[in-house]
Amino acid sequence: MADVWKENILENLEAGLLEYETVGKFSMDIKKEFRGRDEESTKVVELKRLEQGGKIIEKFVQEFRRVARGSEYEICLLIEEFKWNINTTIRKRLMKAECQPSSIKQWQKWAITLDRNWRESRREEERLRE
Image (cartoon, rainbow, N blue to C red; front, top):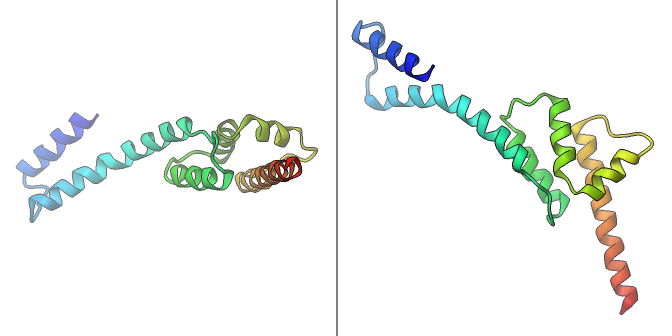
């Protein structure tokens, strides 16, 4: 498909149907055409590779939001990606909740709350051991 587009643009240039004042403007148009598709695909791959791991959930949520922007994911798919990218413990607790979150913002807010509570309880346990 990309080759067809390049051929068409070259044909249109040769036929005088397209005019560019500078090579830079021509180059920018070509980059714009391909960047959109490449960027969306890249975002989807990045989303699938994201993992919370040992990160504090707030940092993970920021990273997730950054990558999700421009991914063109539907909301339900975005929620699924988020669920499977956060730590298993947090995901299981959210899945067991009587009223599960229904939006991506709720999932993120509740995950942040659970992560904060878990980290705070670990600090308290460590203090009690001392």
